Image (cartoon, rainbow, N blue to C red; front, top):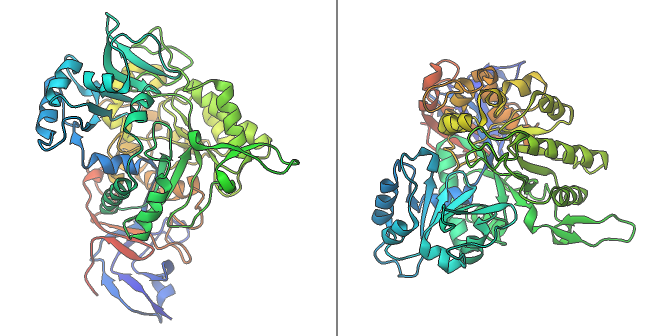
Length: 547
C-alpha cells in the first residue's frame, strides 16, 4: 500500500498515554495509518518535512456561530469603539455612499460594556447612518441597538406600551425607546430583515471557515441555525450543503437546529408525540464532513446584559436576578418531546437557576429513555455553576461547554455583576475535570475572538482585561487545555474514537504549530504561529516543503 501523505521530522503529540509522542505520521484515504515504526516499509505518494514543527490533532470548537462570524467580516466593525463618538465615527466612515437611501446599515462586534461615558444616542445614530435604518449587533449576541429610523420601520413606537415575552425594549426616564433591544425583542427587527439570501449565507460560511483553517481548526459546531433570533434563514442547512458541494467548507461542520423550528410530528397511534423536523430527521444525520448536531434551546440570557437567570440578584442590578426566555413548563415540555424525537439536547444556560432547569430537563429526558445513543446532551456556557451542579453534571454525563476567553474579554464586567463569591464558580474548568466530567473547548465566536491558542492560554491563566484572577481555582494545565480542545470536544460532539487523537484509524485532522504550547511561557501561547492545517489529510492552510 502506498500512503497518500507522510509527514516527517515533526514533534508529534498523539494525545495518547501509551504512545504520547512521535516524529513521523502516515495518512491514507483521510485517516491515520500509523506513527513512527508503524510506517516502516510503506511508500508514500508525497512526503513532507515538518521542519521540527509541533504536530497534534486539529482543534475542535464545539460552540461558535459561523454564519454570524462570516457576516461580521463584511460589516462595519465596532470592536475598537471606546466611546459613543467612536461608534458614530465608525458608522459614518463605514456607510457605502452608493447604498440606497432606505437600505439597512449593519455594524457588528459592539461591546457596550467596553464604552466609557454615555451610550450612543438614537438620534445621533440617525445622523451617522445618513438617514438610513441602522442595526448594530452586540458582541454578546443577546441584544441589538438600532436607530430611530429603524425603530419606526419595524413598528416600535416612541413610547412602547408593552414588552415582548422574554425580552425588553429599553426606554429612558421619559419612557422613550432608546433603540436597545434585549433578547426576544430582537425578533421584532429580525421579522423585517430576515431571512438572509442563501447565497449570502454560503459566502459567509466560506469566509468563516477559511479563517478557521488559518487558526488550526478542523471541526466546528454551529450553535443554532434555521430560526429563532440566532438563525439566518429557514433554509440555512441548505446553505451548508451548498458550501460543502462547492468546496467552501474548510472545516468539518456540525450545526445545531434551534428549538424554534421543530414542530409536532404525527406518528403511529402506538407512538408518543414528538417534536422534530418533517420526515423524522434528527440529530446525527450526515457524516464526518457535515452532520446535524443537537437541538439548541435558549433557557436564559447573558451575564453581560444581566439577563441570565440567577438564584440571587445581580450585584449591579439589585432588583433583578435575570429571567428565562419562555415559560418554564413550555420549555421543559418542548425539550422532552424533542428528545423523544431523537434529538440530543444543547441547552443554553448561563445563570445557576437556568443550569438547575437544564439539569432537571436532561435528567427527566434520560429517565424517559430519550437519550440519543450517538450524541451527548450538553449545557452551553455555564456562567455560574455551583459545586452541587458540577456533581450532577458529572453524574448525568453531560458536557458543559464553557468559554474561557470570556474571562479575558469580559471578566471585569462579569465579575462586577456577579460579585466575588459567584465569580469563583463562573465558567468552570478544573472542577469539572476533578468531578470526572467532560471538558470541551469553545469560543462562542463572534461573541469573543475564536482562535484556539489564545483560548487555551485563557484556560490556563483565567485573567481579566485588567489582569485580575477570575476563579483562580478553576485554572487548568496547558496539557489539560489541549486535551479539552481535542479529545474533550470530540466527546462532546459524539465523535470520540474518531477525532481528537493521532492514532491508526483516526480521522487525519491535524495542525502544525511553530512551537509546543507546553514549552513556551503561558502568556506566549496565544502568539504561536499556525504553520499548517489538514482535514482528512488534505491541506486547508499552509504548505510544508517536500522531504
